[in-house]
Length: 267
Image 1: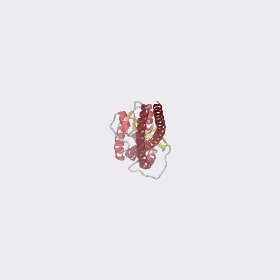
Image 2: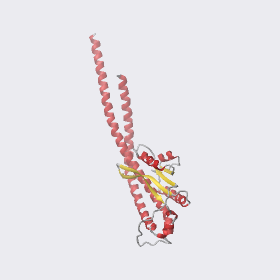
Image 3: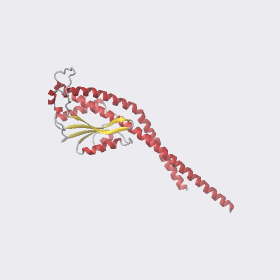
Image 4: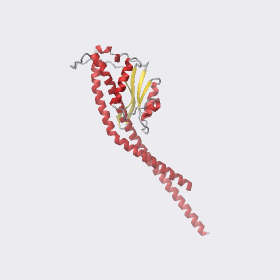
């Protein structure tokens, strides 16, 4: 009986320690949610602005000559994979890597500590990934695409729907696709549309990249908050059950000791 009480005491201490950790991580995630969502919204606004310009240009027939608008091919697929910098975020990282099983053989460029650990590349932290980092990477990727080092560029990221819902997805960036209809918006591009398109593509790739990173980070923070809340509730339920077992074991032990004392005094 004494061994059972000691074992329960150790388990209660262990679960309590884990609960302190999950509460702390949940509080950290909560403190980051507002900033992460604000960064995501700002990056979306920037991307929408750049995307409108690109769509106007790709609708122009002359722009079909751009090296960024050649026919898409999966022969040399390059994927930027955005995962988290740490674990304990529910299925956030697992969903990304599960999606990546469909693209075995692709050339992978990871962002986020977990992705870098999995694919063995230089560590680029998702939380600290800046516009400058995105622009430098985008220019490099655009040059590689023009040189034929890869024929298609995609970004594997986590799409944010709500605090309770995030989805692993892929967005193809290069080559550019021709818009369905040419709209007259009264814009005049100097020196010409083709030159402007080729110049603006690195900005466009930067916008898509930073938007995907910010959205993935917001998804990671939300997933961690939900996971830690769930872990905290589970820990509390387990503590309640263990405390009940512990109290019953103590009561049984005390009753047995009293019985033995009474029996002994009767002799």
